[in-house]
Length: 157
Image (cartoon, rainbow, N blue to C red; front, side, top):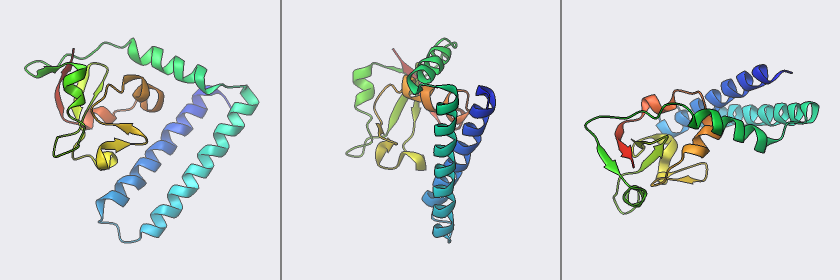
């Protein structure tokens, strides 16, 4: 399996998993068991493909993460005009706790994840709001349009 085919498969699988998570958070889907079964199946399939690809191509996850991080961070940093600027210390206050909104920074732009179902309790797959998540985002979501769906609240300085 070549790298592009493998990455396309992972991208599609992650989209399916995210759709299932959104269904579970929405409380509009009555058959949660069916969604959980599909989610489990997607994760198991994804795990098997990763193991197969890693074995046959001697792929090391650290090398792949570094490649995506490098590509992602070399992209132009979008500057959002007429928005507030935040330091890392100021961003840390927006951690989603004690009634505060939940903000995250990616590639110099700060996004509001307060009302995003995937960020329930101001955390997402072990990541916490109030932080610069550029390298974490690049390793997991490089090339996706997830950020286009989030409200922009400022720029990280």
